[in-house]
Length: 174
Figure 1 (cartoon, rainbow, N blue to C red):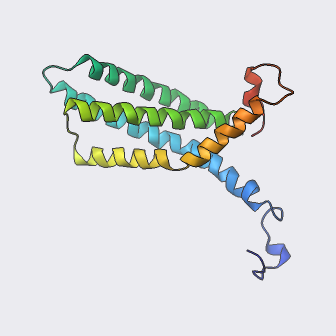
Figure 2 (figure 1 turned 180 degrees about the horizontal axis):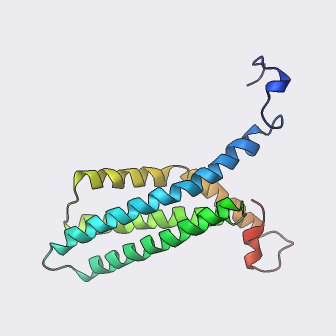
């Protein structure tokens, strides 16, 4: 926005720092807030899969295992979403690590769900299929940025001043 003609007093934030001071702050909050609806969607889809599987006479063990994995991921997502909300509320540095793991877990949930749906032959209703597409789209959003954020976290962990891993990395600024 060079030479756009705005007066100095209309500047929001510090000059040259609008993205880091304003956009990134909202990204963290947006990431945190989205864990609630994503968790709810995961739970809803799981309930629909359960209902459809109840109508199948014989279910292969790998699909039962997959169903159990989905349940554990939804239960973990509920707990993780709560912790993410608390960390966001307190502006804790661990927020980023929690959100990154939530994103990773959501991707795993979608993989297991896909294996069940493609292998078991159960067919979900159209609204549920749309919700799965929404979950997949949400999972893809910011995927490359999440990779960059994990790389930065990895670099911080390899800092020469760090002698070993300990939970204090969670409180290091990103």
